[in-house]
Length: 217
Image 1 (cartoon, one colour):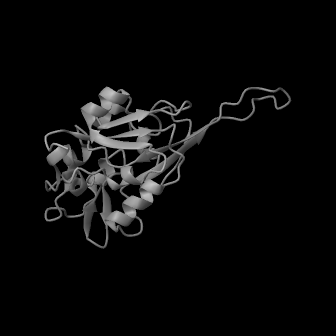
Image 2 (cartoon, one colour):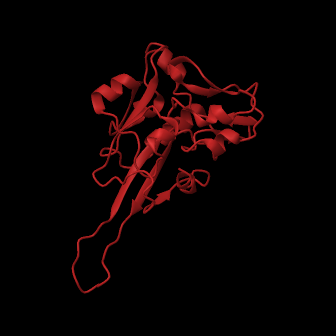
Image 3 (cartoon, helix red, strand yellow):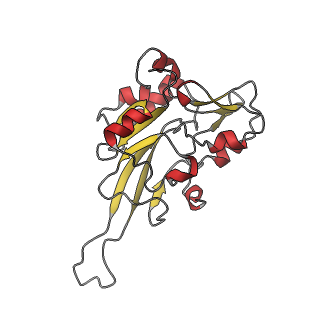
């Protein structure tokens, strides 16, 4: 992949079954400690089984779907905006990464990011995050999360290529609206996917990646 091409991810929600193989492969490849997951699989569910009258058969409005999510290497990254030391930087492929020599571990980036991408690594003593497996991109290989997905729900590459191939949908609940940070992400929504900000579902997420985040947008 050319370094001047902006990198992005594609996720086909209709194929993602929540197996978390991508999450485990990333964790193994990056050898990240407990509590640090650069890719996370989010389950979003909601709806009702019956109406107000339990004696009357009514159609249900139940939905449940998965979103495999890592850093989206946004065009307008909230993490870079709030970093007081300039440790959050955008480099080759448009990838947002952490300069460990400048990071003071204040966690401002983690609080600002609507996707929970920057995470504090207590072993390293500074913030860490997905770097798109840049070293693999340099070798013409896919990020390890993409390569490991058994259902081929993930794809990575130049975002313009992905958008030309799959469209421009980049936000469904529980994700923030596209306009917030302009993520380099393309989604094929699951048939029951809810619009961003609808607030009717429940997210099953790590503690730091709570749905309270989405209420801010």
